[in-house]
Length: 162
Image (spheres, rainbow, N blue to C red):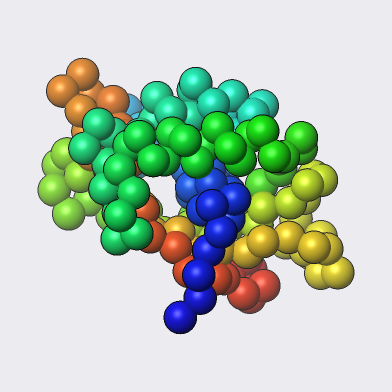
């Protein structure tokens, strides 16, 4: 079993949220899938802009994960990651979005996290980047907005980006 440092956990969480931002196809603008993709687009923009406030706003009050993190712990990890990284760039591939219930969504995303821009999967060859697969659980809040309620992650491979 591998252990993650606090910095790695922060990086992972930021990229988990941001990983959902890139979509290969566009669903109808008013669909739940489009709403989830819009959340991801917000997250990616906030992560790359190093905007901790906007990233924290995407975490559900009841956030809890298998690593024992709650919302407060994730907010602290976000702050630390942003302080330690002057440049944040993402390449993501959404592996799937499902809706087990009307107000719940799960999203699986392959994410490459790098200190310089990565435009295509081909750019990853020979580049030092952290590769992860994120499985996110989202919940629709009372106001209709989607928030991250839980996240799990594992190392990804280059093949996951094609």
